[in-house]
Amino acid sequence: MAAPLTTGAAPSPEQGVRRVATALLFLAAVALPCLVLYHAVAPAGVLVPPAAMLPWMQAAGPPHDDDEVNLESDSEDARLERVLRAAAMANDTVILTTLNSAWSEPGSVVDVFLESFRIGEHTRELLDHLVIVSLDATAHRRCKQIHTHCLAVATEGVDFSGQKNFMSDGYLRMMWRRIDFLRLVLEKGFSFIFTDTDIVWFRSPLLHLYAEGDFQIACDHFTGDPDDLGNMPNGGFTYVRANSETVEFYKYWYAARERYPGRHDQDVLNMIKRDPYLEEIGVSIRFLSTEFFGGLCEPSRNLSTVCTMHANCCVGLRRKINDLNVMLHDWRRFMSLRDKDKHSVSWSVPQNCSLKKVE
Ligand SMILES: *[C@@H]1O[C@H](CO)[C@@H](O)[C@H](O)[C@H]1NC(C)=O
Ligand SMILES: *[C@@H]1O[C@H](CO)[C@@H](O)[C@H](O)[C@H]1NC(C)=O
Ligand SMILES: *[C@@H]1O[C@H](CO)[C@@H](O)[C@H](O)[C@H]1NC(C)=O
Image 1 (tube, rainbow, N blue to C red):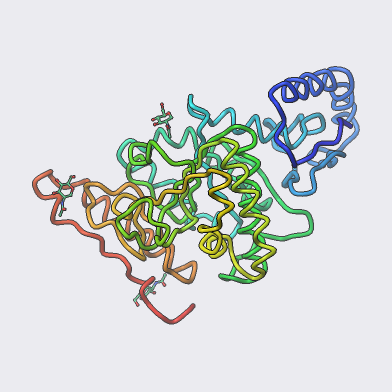
Image 2 (cartoon, rainbow, N blue to C red):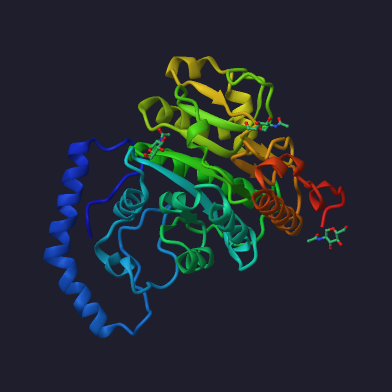
């Protein structure tokens, strides 16, 4: 199979070109005849796993009729680049979310998430730039039914498919997996807006991201000062520019999990945000206002300005789905009114999310 790939240092552009060239040559010389042979002898729907599989990323489920047919010749690395390239805006920016099977079921979180883009103001076209990163085979299959840009990312021996209870071991591994994955996206040269799937999008956030700031993050509580490290960040929504500073920052953040065992990425971010090493790296961190990037912890008060609303401060999947649907309902009502009446609409959330008893 092709030369072994590493996930460590970022490849230079020359290396990237060489890698693509090698892959193409390989495809022409070996993989195509193999594929023909393979299709002749293998029963339909049976997938022979690619030999040089990266340990942290693997194919999910049987191949479909589309791009995965050439899986044999297509390294996971090349697939990542191809999906990102296809979804990127002209400035190499993508929108990313991660999905597991519990959140991918019909009527579950992902359906509400996608619906918000369709009913938001000028958000539908942003779907062209959204990559849904599936953490298990079921989520990946569902993604392919409902969305264009799907990527399967899994960790060998780890099942991310069930509903993850907050702070369980599986939940933590899933959260840290995401940080490691996002570092790789930055290394590939793609800037991104990462959004949790339990965030509804009603307006494009692009205009409200700061012109300055390598790493921008939404907040559970916003102090009013974008540069105040006392803000309480929420890792469910970030905008990160691809540069050497942010790559180094993500490596440092990911490595810090070992110093703080049992903590999730957001806690650890709070613990390292004042580390002198971050200044040494030179990464600038800025906090996004809840006025535009609101949530149940601190709702955006004005539906005339809100971009996104996060079902944070909410325990329990069914409650989350309930309140996310209430947000869609509030938004529809707001949009249906004449301008002079719009001010009368305010959020009717939290509803079930405000209940204390855990499901
Ligand atoms: C990238 O390009 C899009 C589309 O042209 C633009 O709206 C957006 O502001 C740019 N993104 C950033 C974060 O600069
Ligand atoms: C909400 O935002 C709109 C548009 O910026 C503004 O005209 C209006 O006064 C705001 N309403 C409140 C209650 O702050
Ligand atoms: C939400 O709360 C209402 C009122 O307590 C309850 O009737 C309903 O079953 C709850 N729905 C969900 C999805 O938890």
